[in-house]
Image (cartoon, rainbow, N blue to C red; front, top):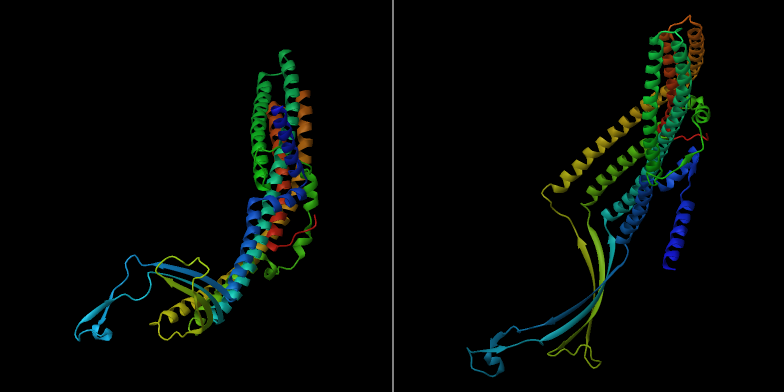
Length: 447
């Protein structure tokens, strides 16, 4: 009965896990899933929550603060004081030993503090707001990078899948050619070299297939890690490489203006400049006075014995209202040096912002160029594959008709296999180049 309960629990747990983690993903579903479950994306979300808490922490510094203290003292040996004995009717010149106060006392005090003016507090409020914006921009940047990583990983898996299919198909054709050539050779109508040439080609393709299968397993594991699931989980991709390629050949992005100020990298650099401006303002406010007020109240009890929990203990109350004014006067040039250092850092941030703007212009132009080349190269490689297929088919026909050598057939086959691999790679290049352009420009298309 106990084993049955454990079995039911494990079945329910497995069912719940399978419900939470999809096993089939289109590319868009993979992106959506990763943006919620990728570990970097989740930490970026946590950073925003942390920034919100820090913003309130800074705000609360200027709000009323209440502290309470309880102080209990028990003199193991009370201090003895001496006073002139004549105060008590004694002889002049003599001293009397006396003990002031009781052996035990308790003081309970509550204090209310309120900041009235502090320049650094006002700057702190502005800084907390900017820090939140920095965290939000970092989240956007992280999501863009996660999206690009998913597209790359997803494309690598599809590339591996297509590679396996093509190589397996090539092996079937090669094995058939080898069997037919071997029979012709055994009948004395073909040279042994022809058989050996086909054997070499078949062996190379089989080796490539084994390697691609290993790479496919690694590609799936990399995709799983990017999605934020267990690297060994079994998943299925519902998109295919060719359909994604055709969906991503959208050259409209090439005609859009390069407004670098709308990119997340520019906004992050601008956040850095604003933060340096606030640091400079903070250093300047340190030369201003600060003012705070406080009010406290408390009760104190005295006795030689511990009677402070009894209802008849006599407590003496007290209360105090006050102001604290702190005026910086002289710091031996420390504040001035800190202000000048803040000015230098601000100038550096301004130059970094200008540099970022220039670099982004170049990155966008390069990303557009790479995307345009990838689209053109895809169309070119598609034509090349069609030509390579016709050439290989003709050479295969010529070979079995005895008017082409095995070397010529092998050369045509090698050319065909290269064209197949190049076309697959250009498909992946189109997808990745589009993702790179969207990441740099911070413009995500609907495709």
